Amino acid sequence: VTADCAKEFYLLYSRLEAEYGITRHCMDILDRATTAVPAEDKYEVFLYYIKKVEEYYGVTKTREVYEKAMETVPEDKVKDIALRFADLETKLGEVQRARMIFTYASQFCNPQTQVTFWEMWRDFEARYGNTDTFKEMQRTKRSVQAEFMQVGAGRSGER
Image (tube, rainbow, N blue to C red; front, side):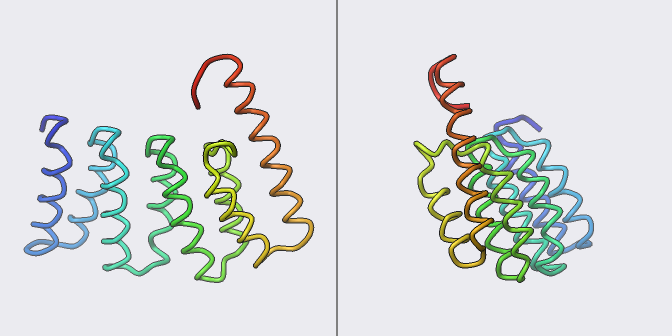
């Protein structure tokens, strides 16, 4: 399978298995797709994989796929996966898990350019946190901002 058609091949193959084969085979194909497709297709493949895992096994089974996605998708897509994952954990009442996801994703989110991410985290802490967790979020933001400023001083652009 060539890189330019890998995504289509894996998605079609997984749909075939889902419809006419065995669910587990469909999941195996989607798992393989997450490593086989080019970087620019990984985000879309993971979203489809997460949707199928939720459909067949339930929402709590998507955690493992979300975790793999955050480690695998290009850095510019980590924020998007993390926000979806944090929202899921919040809906499940797992506030501490959601906070850890925000903390992990923050290292990829320059406060100067990823304003929405930081606003969403601030709103999360205002709703579910306390003074200490809010202050910790602010400390993390300052630390990340300093890191991006250092990187920016060394070269142009973002990490």
